[in-house]
Length: 145
Image 1 (tube, rainbow, N blue to C red):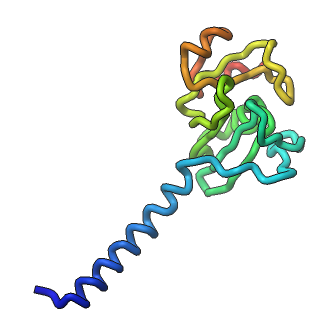
Image 2 (image 1 turned 45 degrees about the horizontal axis):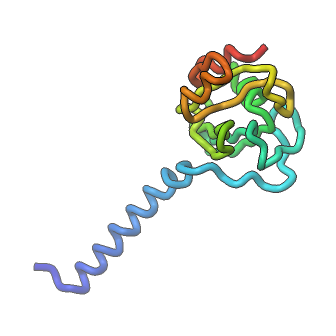
Protein backbone atom coordinates (compact mmCIF):
# COMPACT_ATOMS: atom_id res chain seq x y z
CA UNK A 1 0.00 0.00 0.00
CA UNK A 2 1.25 3.49 -0.89
CA UNK A 3 1.86 6.05 1.82
CA UNK A 4 -0.84 8.68 2.08
CA UNK A 5 1.44 11.52 0.85
CA UNK A 6 2.38 9.54 -2.27
CA UNK A 7 -1.29 8.84 -3.03
CA UNK A 8 -2.06 12.53 -2.66
CA UNK A 9 0.74 13.48 -5.09
CA UNK A 10 -0.45 10.91 -7.62
CA UNK A 11 -4.04 12.19 -7.31
CA UNK A 12 -2.95 15.80 -7.81
CA UNK A 13 -0.84 14.78 -10.80
CA UNK A 14 -3.70 12.84 -12.43
CA UNK A 15 -6.15 15.71 -11.85
CA UNK A 16 -3.66 18.14 -13.39
CA UNK A 17 -3.25 15.88 -16.40
CA UNK A 18 -7.01 15.66 -16.89
CA UNK A 19 -7.26 19.45 -16.72
CA UNK A 20 -4.52 19.93 -19.30
CA UNK A 21 -6.07 17.46 -21.75
CA UNK A 22 -9.69 18.51 -21.26
CA UNK A 23 -9.09 22.28 -21.39
CA UNK A 24 -8.70 22.47 -25.20
CA UNK A 25 -11.87 20.41 -25.68
CA UNK A 26 -13.94 22.47 -23.26
CA UNK A 27 -12.73 25.75 -24.75
CA UNK A 28 -14.60 24.91 -27.97
CA UNK A 29 -17.84 23.83 -26.31
CA UNK A 30 -19.29 27.36 -26.27
CA UNK A 31 -18.86 30.32 -28.58
CA UNK A 32 -16.58 33.12 -27.48
CA UNK A 33 -18.19 36.50 -26.79
CA UNK A 34 -17.78 38.73 -29.83
CA UNK A 35 -15.36 41.48 -28.79
CA UNK A 36 -16.52 45.08 -29.20
CA UNK A 37 -15.65 46.60 -32.59
CA UNK A 38 -14.77 43.22 -34.12
CA UNK A 39 -14.60 43.31 -37.90
CA UNK A 40 -16.07 40.63 -40.12
CA UNK A 41 -13.37 38.29 -41.43
CA UNK A 42 -14.96 38.38 -44.90
CA UNK A 43 -16.22 41.90 -45.59
CA UNK A 44 -14.61 44.05 -42.88
CA UNK A 45 -17.90 45.41 -41.53
CA UNK A 46 -18.32 45.66 -37.74
CA UNK A 47 -19.93 42.51 -36.33
CA UNK A 48 -23.03 43.21 -34.24
CA UNK A 49 -22.89 40.75 -31.30
CA UNK A 50 -26.69 40.98 -30.95
CA UNK A 51 -27.49 40.16 -34.57
CA UNK A 52 -29.32 36.91 -35.25
CA UNK A 53 -27.22 36.59 -38.41
CA UNK A 54 -23.69 36.73 -36.94
CA UNK A 55 -21.46 33.67 -37.05
CA UNK A 56 -18.33 32.48 -35.30
CA UNK A 57 -15.74 29.97 -36.46
CA UNK A 58 -12.87 28.17 -34.77
CA UNK A 59 -10.46 26.94 -37.41
CA UNK A 60 -8.44 23.74 -37.24
CA UNK A 61 -5.39 25.80 -36.23
CA UNK A 62 -7.34 27.36 -33.32
CA UNK A 63 -7.97 30.76 -34.90
CA UNK A 64 -11.21 32.52 -33.86
CA UNK A 65 -13.06 34.26 -36.68
CA UNK A 66 -16.24 36.33 -36.54
CA UNK A 67 -18.67 37.19 -39.33
CA UNK A 68 -21.43 39.80 -39.59
CA UNK A 69 -23.58 37.52 -41.76
CA UNK A 70 -23.98 33.76 -42.11
CA UNK A 71 -23.60 34.21 -45.86
CA UNK A 72 -20.22 35.90 -45.39
CA UNK A 73 -19.04 32.94 -43.30
CA UNK A 74 -20.21 30.46 -45.93
CA UNK A 75 -18.59 32.48 -48.71
CA UNK A 76 -15.32 32.76 -46.78
CA UNK A 77 -15.03 28.98 -46.38
CA UNK A 78 -16.72 27.92 -49.63
CA UNK A 79 -13.51 26.55 -51.10
CA UNK A 80 -11.71 25.78 -47.85
CA UNK A 81 -14.21 23.87 -45.67
CA UNK A 82 -11.46 21.62 -44.32
CA UNK A 83 -10.24 24.47 -42.12
CA UNK A 84 -13.47 24.50 -40.08
CA UNK A 85 -13.19 22.92 -36.64
CA UNK A 86 -16.44 24.30 -35.23
CA UNK A 87 -19.02 26.81 -36.40
CA UNK A 88 -21.55 28.70 -34.30
CA UNK A 89 -24.57 30.53 -35.69
CA UNK A 90 -27.57 32.07 -33.99
CA UNK A 91 -30.99 30.48 -33.95
CA UNK A 92 -33.27 32.92 -35.78
CA UNK A 93 -36.19 32.30 -33.42
CA UNK A 94 -34.39 32.68 -30.07
CA UNK A 95 -31.14 34.47 -30.94
CA UNK A 96 -29.22 31.81 -28.96
CA UNK A 97 -25.94 30.38 -30.27
CA UNK A 98 -26.17 26.91 -31.77
CA UNK A 99 -23.64 24.64 -33.44
CA UNK A 100 -23.59 25.32 -37.14
CA UNK A 101 -23.30 21.65 -38.04
CA UNK A 102 -26.59 20.94 -36.24
CA UNK A 103 -28.54 23.93 -37.61
CA UNK A 104 -31.05 24.12 -40.44
CA UNK A 105 -30.55 26.94 -42.95
CA UNK A 106 -33.14 28.77 -45.01
CA UNK A 107 -32.81 31.37 -47.76
CA UNK A 108 -35.67 33.86 -47.83
CA UNK A 109 -35.69 37.47 -49.05
CA UNK A 110 -37.72 38.39 -45.94
CA UNK A 111 -34.53 37.99 -43.87
CA UNK A 112 -32.86 41.39 -43.81
CA UNK A 113 -29.29 40.30 -43.14
CA UNK A 114 -26.29 42.67 -42.79
CA UNK A 115 -24.79 41.77 -46.18
CA UNK A 116 -28.10 40.85 -47.86
CA UNK A 117 -27.39 37.12 -48.11
CA UNK A 118 -30.91 36.46 -46.73
CA UNK A 119 -29.87 33.25 -44.95
CA UNK A 120 -31.02 32.39 -41.43
CA UNK A 121 -30.23 29.43 -39.19
CA UNK A 122 -32.64 27.49 -36.99
CA UNK A 123 -32.24 24.99 -34.16
CA UNK A 124 -35.46 23.19 -35.07
CA UNK A 125 -36.27 21.92 -38.55
CA UNK A 126 -39.99 22.50 -37.94
CA UNK A 127 -39.34 26.20 -37.27
CA UNK A 128 -37.14 26.47 -40.36
CA UNK A 129 -39.93 24.93 -42.50
CA UNK A 130 -42.16 27.89 -41.61
CA UNK A 131 -39.76 30.06 -43.64
CA UNK A 132 -38.91 27.79 -46.55
CA UNK A 133 -37.05 24.63 -47.48
CA UNK A 134 -34.37 23.98 -44.85
CA UNK A 135 -30.99 22.51 -45.69
CA UNK A 136 -28.19 21.19 -43.47
CA UNK A 137 -24.80 22.89 -43.09
CA UNK A 138 -23.34 21.22 -46.18
CA UNK A 139 -26.40 22.28 -48.19
CA UNK A 140 -26.16 25.85 -46.89
CA UNK A 141 -23.28 26.54 -49.29
CA UNK A 142 -25.78 26.03 -52.10
CA UNK A 143 -27.89 28.92 -50.76
CA UNK A 144 -25.27 31.47 -51.77
CA UNK A 145 -26.58 33.39 -54.76
